[in-house]
Image (cartoon, rainbow, N blue to C red; front, side, top):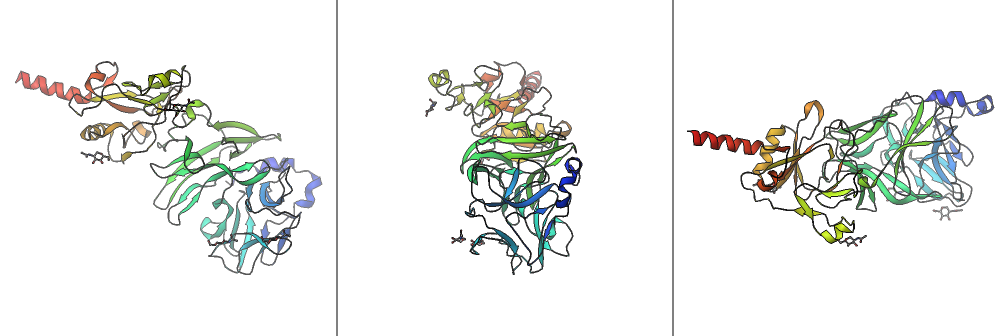
Length: 451
Ligand SMILES: *[C@@H]1O[C@H](CO)[C@@H](O)[C@H](O)[C@H]1NC(C)=O
Ligand SMILES: *[C@@H]1O[C@H](CO)[C@@H](O)[C@H](O)[C@H]1NC(C)=O
Ligand SMILES: *[C@@H]1O[C@H](CO)[C@@H](O)[C@H](O)[C@H]1NC(C)=O
Ligand SMILES: *[C@@H]1O[C@H](CO)[C@@H](O)[C@H](O)[C@H]1NC(C)=O
C-alpha cells in the first residue's frame, strides 16, 4: 500500500496549489473542520471534507481523491443522514469520538466507538483510510480505535478488507448508492457470504443472488476464470479470526478502485498517469453466464453456444416446452436416476465454475482418489472436486442435491474440473468417462473368474 501512486499526484501538482500542500492530515481534540475546510493525507492521495453530489443540495462528510477532478468520492460518513443546509462541523468530542454536527448542534453522525479514549486523534492516511487512534500510537491496525475502512460504502480501495472479523462479528461489505445524487444505501450489496464455503456474492436486496465469484481455489476465486488483471493482486485470508478478500495495487502507474454501482455492476476502474478519465477494465456480471443460476438446476452455461444453456450430460430439461422457449429457470433432471448400485461412476467436466455450495462437504486432507471413494460411499453425493487446484490439486469438495450456477470457461488453461456422478447406463453413453470404480470391479470379476 505504501507504493500507492504518489508519483502521479506529484507530477500533477502545480505551483498554484502549493498553498494547500500544508493542509493537515490530522484532527486533534478541540480542533474542528467546517464546510470548505479539509484534511489531506500526507502523500496527497486523498482528501476528507464536505461535498454535495452534483444535482443535490445535501451536504455529506466524505473522502475523495485529492487532485482528481471531477471529485471521485470513495467514502461517505452520513450516507443516510444528509445535512440539509450548508453548515457542518466535524470535531472530536470530549469522549474521544469523531462527531459531525449541524448548525443547531444536532448530532448528524458519529464514529460511535465504545472503546475510545479521550486523547484520541483522527488521521487521514494516504491509503484513504480515516483512523481514530491515540495520539502517541504508531500506525498499526491494532492501534486503531475506529477506521473508515471498516465501514465501506460502495468502493473497495487497495488494502481494504471485504469480509468478516469473526471475533467481533464485524462484516464489511459494499452497498451501492441509491442513485448518482444520493449516497444512501441502494439495492445492491457485495460481500463475503459465509453460509457455505466463503465466497464473495453480489446480491439484490437481502437474499437474491445476482452473481457469485465461487469459493477460493487456492489461486483465485473459482468462478472468475483466468482473467489477467495487470493492476491488482487479489488475496483471500481465511483464519480463525478473520475471513476476507483484499487486493493490492501492483502497478504504480495506475490508481485502481473497485466500485459497486447503483445498477448492480461491480466495476474495476483504473486511472493512468496523465489521464483524468477513469477507465473500466472489467466488470461483473460480465455476460449472461455470470447471472446467478442462469441455466437452472443441473444446467450449464456456455457463452459461445446458442442457446447458451444446456443440461449437464445425463440430464434432460425439467420442462421441454419452457426450455424450447429459452426459459431455463426450471432446470434439468436426470434422464436415469441414480440407484446407488455398483457400476456408478463419474463424468469429468473440465474447466468450469464450480456449482454453488448449497449443500456440501469439505475435507482438505483427502486427495482426488479418496474423494471419489468418499462420494461413492454416500448415496446422496452427486459430485466431487479438488478444493485446491495448486500443485496438481488437493483437498476434497463434495456436493449433495442440485448443481446450480455452473458455467464453462473459455480459457483452456484453467485446471478446475468437477466429477459428476452417473448411473452405469449413462456412463456407457459417453466417451472420456472416468471409471475407476468400474475398473476395480472388472479387475475383481476377472480375477475371480480366473481363479
Ligand atoms: C440538526 O439536526 C437535528 C437532529 O438531527 C435536527 O433536529 C435539526 O433540525 C437540524 N438542524 C438543522 C438546521 O438542520
Ligand atoms: C451509537 O451506537 C448505539 C449502540 O450501538 C446506537 O444505539 C446509537 O444510535 C448510535 N449513535 C449514533 C449517533 O450513531
Ligand atoms: C419461466 O418459467 C417459470 C416456471 O418454471 C415461470 O414462473 C416464469 O414466469 C417463466 N419466465 C418467463 C420469462 O416466461
Ligand atoms: C450422506 O451425506 C449426507 C449429507 O452430508 C448425510 O446427511 C448422510 O448422513 C450421509 N449418509 C451416509 C450413509 O453417510
